[in-house]
Image 1 (cartoon, rainbow, N blue to C red):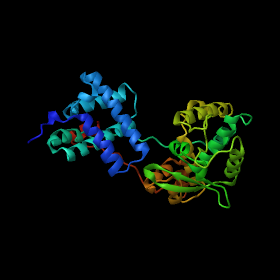
Image 2: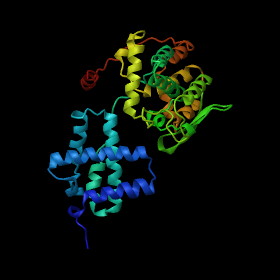
Image 3: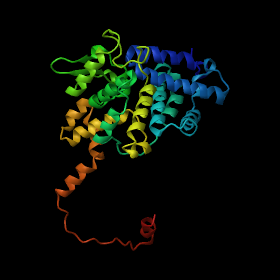
Image 4: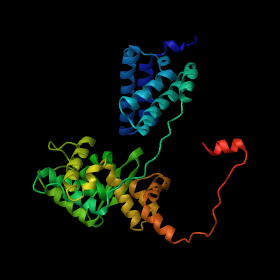
Amino acid sequence: MKIHTSTIKLGSLLQQFFTERLMQQRHASPCTIAAYRDCFRLLLVFAELRLSKRPANMILQDLSPNFVLEFLDHLEKERYNSIRSRNARFAAIRAFLHYAAAKEPSVLAITQSVLAIPMKRFERPLVGFFSREQVQAILDAPDPDTWSGRRDRVMFSTLYNTGARVSELIHLRIADVSLESSPAVHILGKGRKERHVPLWSSTAKQIKRWLKEGKPRGPEQPLFPNRKNGSLTRTSVAERLQLAVQKAATNYPELSHRRISPHLFRHSVAMHLLQAGVDITVIALWLGHESTATTHMYVEADLAMKERALKSLQAPQSRSTRYRPRDPVLQFLQGL
């Protein structure tokens, strides 16, 4: 019996996508599942308002190209998502539609029409980073006379030392840190990739002092807990950093005019390693990049390195001539 597209419930297929494709077949990380979950929650809430349909009553045919484009436009204009975030949401929808097409061939026409929508192009800004002096000012900003201040000092030092992502930092356990002869931290990164990052002796000493403070904690406890010994959230880390930056801005006023996030520590250690002459492949391993092509963006952002390269090469002697098209059509094109 032929299955009509209109009879395929979106909800049941969506549940299969999460449990069968993401969890069982791909063994996706919790972060990936959470990102896809958030995308479809936003999509279903938008659909309920726009289509006046409860999520349980939606069918796959409701995901028309026009509707998907309206949703993506809603993300940008009403939720103020960046183009990068908009594309990430769209990537989740595309992954689901690829699965739906394989599961239900009858919906191939619908899925192909949505998959034909291109990702939106955007300009990639140069990487932002702190100077060495700004990093030191931020690390010194938290109050050493309070428990949260002492935690923030060692937490930000670890963040800068390791170049960890915030999601990696908040999931660090005490067992992930080795403080023996060669201090290092074990990080479970993006896509379940693991890496060991060495710790500077100063960072290792800070962590040792931190672990001796307060009540004894087991190896599975968070390395940087909240007041209730639970894990910090991304938002709470960002808020604590904002407080430290506000204090550091008294000596470095330019910090108050910048958009600050914990990810800037990751960019900063990469830039400082590059400026210190560390090979780009080592930096890629340090940060957990799958390809050095990703790490190459730090070379592009380092203006001082470009200036040194420019000084080492003598400019060629040449006379400049101006192109003057004679043909009227070429003149028109030249004037565009």
